[in-house]
Image (cartoon, rainbow, N blue to C red):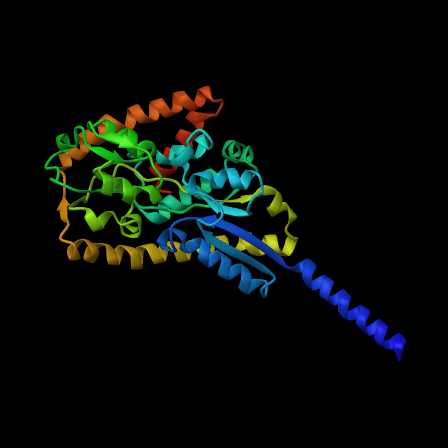
Length: 336
């Protein structure tokens, strides 16, 4: 009887160890609060858990693991397995993907932004660029064209941006400089305080961020059609952690990306954008629309110089910058 019990106990313990060995738990670093911008991360975690019967789980932390500007650094040292960041927060660390932040590229839909980002993320030069941080690009966070919420007198023309302190990162900041604005780069979580204290008078964001980070609470006007560009905010995974996954878990993770992005795009288009107009109306925020002639002049002044400067700077870094730029603009021209 003792031998039988001992054998049974061994079997139970062995089964326990096997179960423990199969379990995978990842920590995921994002920031702010749950919002449209993080819906694909949330959905990915749900899908992965569902499809592995809870064997592969993700703990999503909103600012508890790292500051948003340090997420790529955290990935590089394996402080957590997955993270989201925006390229414009540290252009020198991820120069290859900042091509997607150039002003007036001509991307018109979230789906197009998604497809172009996913294609660029597969480019060998881009993968090598992120590999310096032990990072593998998993999926983008497609965002619409940015527009500006500001306080005080609304600009009647683009000339009224002269001297205006605007939170604007990357290519959007470069574009705003061409109309005389003074761009300031700061993370999303710093914006409300900067606006409240007068460090900036206006903020360039996508609609979800204007709502999530409170710029519309003290804003008095919003530009409807400035559309200078957007930012690129990928979700990355630590490459070693990805390699250490079992084949089955890795297949589930990678196989869930497209469904998570489908959910993201649908959520942004059907919920976030539906709430945007009413949010402006409730607060009496004035809509500012510029003439077609002014927008065309803005585009002409900003687009080509910014692209030329980006190509020159990043060719000097050793990137195939012209190739990357042509690759992106070619996809846009083809309607990808």
